[in-house]
Length: 390
Image (cartoon, rainbow, N blue to C red; front, side, top):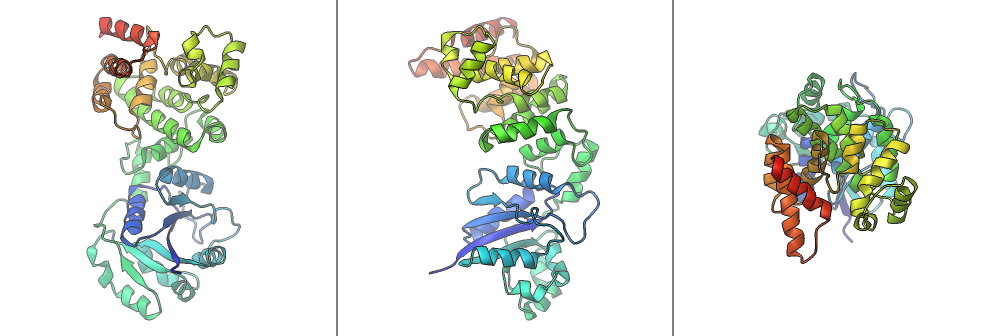
């Protein structure tokens, strides 16, 4: 029976970026790999200045590959004590997965450095190397390749064109406060919230994130980061405090994964004045219930943040700019599946929050009525209000 072929992406991932993902996708496709395991290093032999904590690098890696078929992040190296060497990691993998053939995905910088690896000749017997070019397509003709092959190393080369994307350049952009399109947006937002790589941490974000990590599904957690990322960008455009917008986006679904009965208990205990339809729908109730949770369990006291969480499911007449930003960010964040009004709402959100809200609500009203059902009364009220002021 043929062995299962898996790919290993090892590295500091300081931080993980689009090129890492591109390499893994290409390797999986071109060499018919069953899965790819991302291995953030824990305590590398030559620890570099500016290397963020292993837990943060693992979390960024986990967030980056979430939802990608066959991709997982492993704690194998960060949970081990002492200096970590690839030969030891591969040995553990062979014991755990004896019927697996391993392809180790590397860049050309790593290829040139292979002679310096601990017990390199043993490593060569344990895996094949899949090499990605960084600066030149000519890496396969580099003298190191023939020298290493003579020692038993096996190489194959990915077809990705060269790229100049580097973690060093990304860290420099982050420290300068620049946008970084080379990062998955959920990773960029995590960095900004936590204050990594020279960014100024958002007060309270680390505590809030740790709690959300325990209470939300991974899908909901990534969505929350993407909403925070989108809210931050809209806040910058429309003159709203970015940190306030990011925190509101991060917390907007803090009650989403609660059972409906728990949301109803929160509404009852807090004496929320809500209509029957909202009380019977978790999709609607998690907004007002979430505002209570954010205040009582997360310690949020900012009434503007609490308002934006409370009304993000239905909207309300007299919405403030942050209310609109969180409502819209929830609808247009990057992972949202396409729907007829999506791109137009995204475009309008860059220019006019009220116009974007109106277009989004009108689209919702049209869809609901096309399904021969009645929209929530508040949706129509908010649309009518916006129609008068936009």
